[in-house]
Image (cartoon, rainbow, N blue to C red):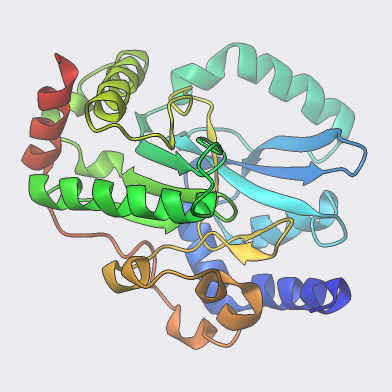
Length: 282
């Protein structure tokens, strides 16, 4: 499909009330960010966007030309419900966010979600299957382990090269909720490293435990291929194809998206606790 037509579909996607409902749900109480990949290799990123309502999204989109430029939408794994709304004046915003990022930002983090990033850009020496097929196979293996532990998790196609397996901080056991955010991030980093080594997983990116880490926002359209960072059910993961996360396909399904959210699996916080403890001290 021609780029011009895809761009029209992109605007239509973000204007759909069912789509934007899910996007705002993913962004609420988090830092949002617009990232433009420029052809000359330089990135434009606008961070510290507080987008808790559709009006805020559209105002920021207009201010930073989100619909006119090739921008991806991101949010932090960290929640910052008290992050202020910054000025739309670029000079003032740059000044205020610099000061905020160097001081108050980490104090305002109230929780930090767990994510395993399965990225098909790793292990490219494998040539008998396409890298994304390897990442899909690995994600299926991780899913089975999470199911066996009875972990409350959800997962999504990352929008380009892989998959994200997520555990919301609201589903943590009580002892995790009492830990400091830096200590929790270090614990998760250690656990995922051990989890990767023990199970010989080759596509897990271990660099996602920075408390300012960004992840593509669920239900957002991603460049350069116009895929959607789409939460997947068990059946959708099992039968996954790039067509099912393509914008031209999903634009015909928006009526089914109202309050679809993350398609989270039911589970028990104690299952997540056991998983962490089992892989912490290997």
